[in-house]
Amino acid sequence: MSLESIKYQRGSLEVLDQLLLPLQTIYIKVEGVEDGWKVINKMQVRGAPAIAIVGCLSLAVELLKDETSDKKVMRQEIEGKLNYLVSARPTAVNIKLAAEELINLANTLSADENVSAKSFKERFITCIENMLVKDIEDNKAIGKFGCEAILKQLEGDSQVRVLTHCNTGSLATAGYGTALGVIRSLHKTSRLEHVYCTETRPYNQGARLTAYELVHEKIPATLIVDSMVAALMHARKITAVVVGADRVAANGDTANKIGTYQIAIVAKHHNVPFYVAAPLTSIDMSLKSGDSIKIEERPDKEMTHIGDFRIAAPGIKCWNPSFDVTPASLITGIITEKGVYAPNNLQEILPP
Image (cartoon, rainbow, N blue to C red):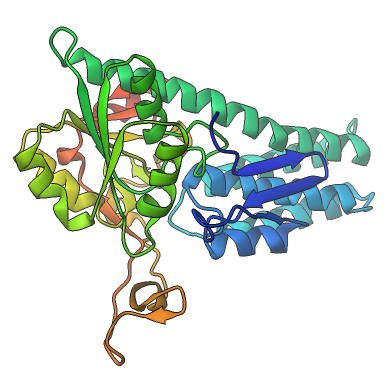
């Protein structure tokens, strides 16, 4: 059974505090938009799909408490709160696209004279709740298509060794996962020999979260430090690299957790296929290339400290971008819920 990072029943939202994993399993109650912004910004919830879902669900929880009976006022509040939620983590595109769709829905419902304020609220909240169900369905489809693409390149019943970076499983989505969903699907076929996961400095999402999920589901895995990737590919035959994405530009350039770009370069040198697993909501066709992706920079303390313990020399300056951009030329395929596409063919599924 996969881990549950989001617990939701109408009017009640709790998220698993991922900063405390793997040592403590504690859920945080999210009472409204302000709480939603905080858990996203502090990275108590992370992963582009999960950020979008938690942000929107925090609005749904708040709307249920709101006694406003004026549709225009409700529409204005919804737009303001959604734009505020987008500001919590600017690189991940999923919440931006979800906000745009929900604002359009609010505008349509507000303008329709046949829709009462009560019906407005019900239809709007139901739309948000459906995001949870759809995300899990999409992740399972990504897992299926990714598994098929990786197995297709092999001869006979060869076993698969996969490398992944950062965390892309149940803890980063509504459930199942994107890149980790591909790994789960491979495991079900009994063709997965081993998974290698990086520690993913400086926040250690691989060591704390991906390793936690792999152990939880009894998937054979080994943790490596980020600087071991080249040595690993030289010493052991890796079948494929599968990572997630926070934003994919129209040309296929992909922003993902810092360290992804260098893994793609090493994979290219060793002729290892490099796949990006991401739902269509992670693809931003408004951006021509990765040069236009805004890269979030995080506080120095994430590099200089582990918890409250300082590990870096006092006074040293830090540069801490949370993401880097992998050029499309290094990407073998982008795995979506609609299939696997070459980076330069994204227009087939999402026209500009």
